[in-house]
Image 1: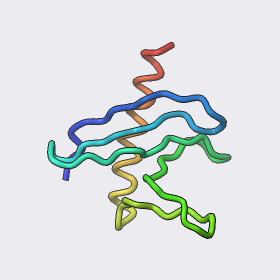
Image 2: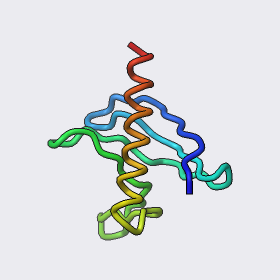
Image 3: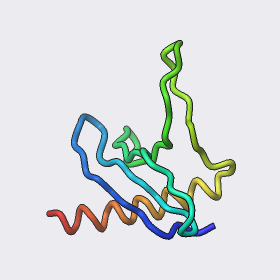
Image 4: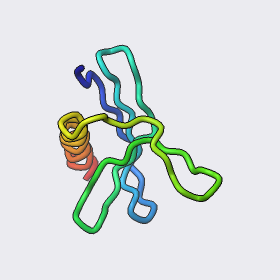
Length: 87
């Protein structure tokens, strides 16, 4: 599985820094990922929906730490490139 496209839409609403769409193998798009500024720095949040009890549940998520790290590294690198270009 390769990330073949990353699209970033910058935002500045509280800790939200951007919305992200990634495309895998030119075949599958994952939308509504978020880049969030947390207490320990930037992280990538997977798409989620709010449940009736007020909790959030990921709609799409990596099933292992290696895949999560790969996605986060590539998305955050692209984010840094985009904000470098934007300033």
